[in-house]
Image (cartoon, rainbow, N blue to C red; front, side):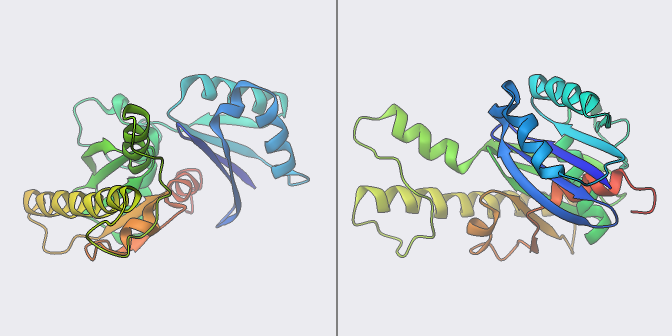
Length: 246
């Protein structure tokens, strides 16, 4: 069994996998700064015999903590990066690409072929583009949905913090409703406009668009251009990269 660890800015997503992902769980990334994460992972792994671990991380301090914990647990750690990602790269500086984005690209290409686009609704909303050759060719980064709504709450005196959900109207009758409409419908419009621009630049008649990340299900409901929602896409990319037989 392999332990897959996807360390994001806000959450760390762990999974146990062989030919499939058997179980997964999320933890707060801040817990890497204390003994909490070690306790979480020990309980998660439990009695499972783990042969190796693959780490995908965008938080260097957490990466170091993960390597230390894995060595103490006598599990060999491997850092997933542009050199071992299992996908071709058409990009000027491959080392600057977030490893989670390469994992997303590998999983999307494997399931949906190429060209393809991944939209990851995390702390940032990222687009990862796989070209006709099946290579990672670049992407787009925008602020995440929660980042935008939290910013409005923190930087204004009268705007409240809102709970993200699907709006029931297009014209708000309260401050909360108006903010919700702007956030959800606004982001859907942003995503659709960017997908169309990508499609034109790739000259793609067929373009699978795969959504993943925390707000993928919420936003994908109103975006017909999105082909599929895959909550475990990043972990699936790590599983594929760590298995010679996929």
